[in-house]
Image 1 (cartoon, helix red, strand yellow):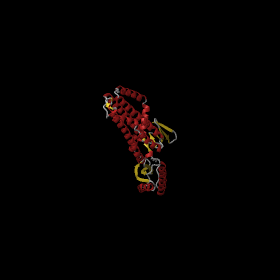
Image 2 (tube, one colour):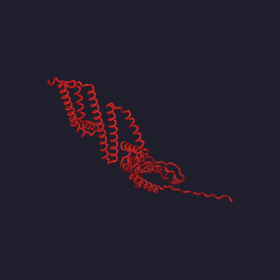
Image 3 (cartoon, one colour):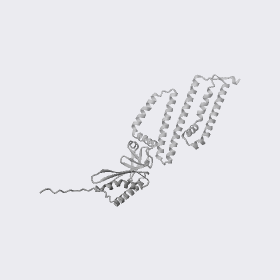
Image 4 (cartoon, helix red, strand yellow):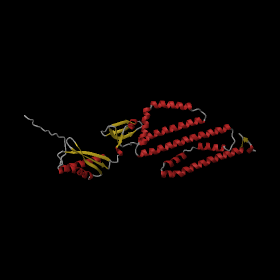
Length: 351
């Protein structure tokens, strides 16, 4: 009978059973893939979490060829195959698993880049989006190179010499492009760590301005006087950066001097007068006011207060109002401001 005939050490019946098992495995795995995708699609839309999106992305990227290879492998377990053929099937399964793993990894990287790009678009940060694309390309290139080397090793190819060659070539390329690569990775550091973003007012060394563009190699800042300042990203990260856009409060200190002829009782009243004037301004938090020191031509008072909003124009408006009110109050109290003066004494000598 037909079912009693054997091929490669297995009867036709065994081959049919293995074929049916492989078919069932493909059907079941395809059904589970579709079921998981449908069940998680709505939760992913509602929750908008990275892990749920990652599961959906991984499920969506499962290839039919991978399922087919897995099904063939499961079916082959029901057969008695020659050692050589079993070894070939095992290697094919491992290669398929490596390829599918690379596809999953690339999908995870693409998802991560896409989510960050969406945030960049919300903040109108096109430079950040470009840098993330470059980072995603580099990560995918590293991933596929690693998978390729594993696949060659699984096929029995000695990859030691290949890895050594890639290492030497990589060092040569890195040395030749060290400045460009340094700026590129500095750009990625700026995008990920975000010491500043577009629109921030920053100070770099003696230069101050507003960030206009963050590129893969340089960052452009519009200075207060109007010209554009261009910094390489690598140099920028090595500098001390002060970000005024992220200031929550502004500490303000100012000094004034009165003449030495001021009566002691009026000197004692000056801190209270200044405190009253400062506390009348909003939004301001008074800190202190003291008779600080004796200067060459003035008795110096130092005052400190906090602006509860960082806006520079608001600060200048309030400081102007404080200065005008101090001028009016001092004039009313008969307190004279000091200015540089010299007094000369002449002594008449004998004879």
